[in-house]
Image (tube, rainbow, N blue to C red):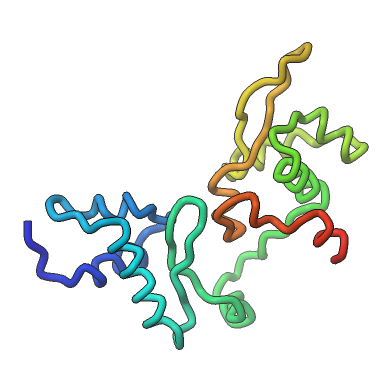
Length: 175
């Protein structure tokens, strides 16, 4: 099948309309016959970003692939569009998430030992519901507690490609 639209426009359209980040393979799979190579797709994404230099949006790479998003610095205007309250997470929620991110895989009991207080089961349920955390196994101890670890959706939400991009513990303590 021959396409009448330039490849770069097809890739741009797919990125604009997708609700999830698109992997290079997912972009290549848009084409039946002459699939562009992953290197060609990366080249075109870089070309698009060059075109966007003076725009308010950019294509970024996260754990699951590529997505178009608004550049930092426009939030004071854009938050007026979203009448819902911004997502405010409790201190306990954030502490639990941070412990999972830095100590994974980790059990609920280990989180409680680190925090010094019991973890509300709803926090773990919410993290699982957001798909920021998943059960990756069970610890070989009595009761076989679940081992929790972060997911690609967690990385995507925080604009990370890998866990190694998380700030170091020293950087966090300096804040």
